[in-house]
Image (tube, rainbow, N blue to C red):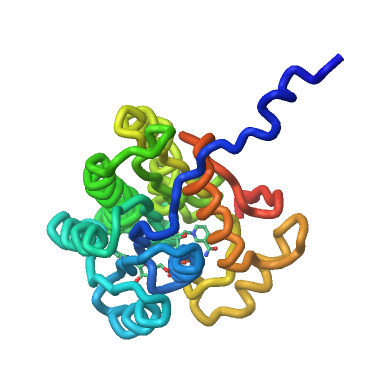
Length: 272
Ligand SMILES: NC(=O)c1ccc[n+]([C@@H]2O[C@H](COP(=O)([O-])OP(=O)(O)OC[C@H]3O[C@@H](n4cnc5c(N)ncnc54)[C@H](O)[C@@H]3O)[C@@H](O)[C@H]2O)c1
């Protein structure tokens, strides 16, 4: 008996064309974002490296190296993000946005002394939510608005967005309440964004990274070594290029939508 799918095996389904289009990568001057900028440029994209103005020097150098441009912007600032989106449109149709900007924070919910004053600083909690969650949504809503004006391809596709959560958004550890809340929000909005943007031909997926070797951990080699020990296999920190490879596949593969994908060696975080 013939396998019923034989007739489709050799059919080439359309992939989102990245070559010649533009992309925005937030947090693009460092770590996972930087690796994604390099990879998307290698795929023929014109890339806007969006990052804070304090990253101007690094961002400019990277943009120059890959033939893109650096836009100083805070992901929570609507006018600055719109300016970056408009700059991307000048380079080519905006078909890809990767949200990699983010900050980490570690504080427990209450202090040890039973005093209200030692409870988790509410402003710090708000700040982490603001950058990691509200900022991701801000860039998504504005980039998607620009993408919705693109000419659709044969599949009706106009663009794709990749957001970045964290394994902490699924099994956050002691002291990760603000960060875990923000990343759980990014995970939670994935299917809703995919549904909201389906009619506009825009897909949205989320990457859930484990531990990657980036500047987010600072120069603390001992901490990195300890994190590497918690991985399953392979027993090492992730290479940002491995994240960038997944991000590129999620942008390109037309049949992946509304999905959250772990890239973490199979590790599961313990309470601490
Ligand atoms: N490295 C890891 O192990 C890991 C694990 C899980 C999730 N993540 C997530 O991946 C993303 C990238 O992390 P990374 O490791 O590359 O960190 P990183 O510190 O190397 O890079 C983050 C970049 O985001 C930028 N940024 C911060 N706040 C911003 C703002 N308000 N507007 C614009 N840019 C801003 C920073 O300037 C920096 O260049 C983050 O969202 C992080 O939470 C990282």
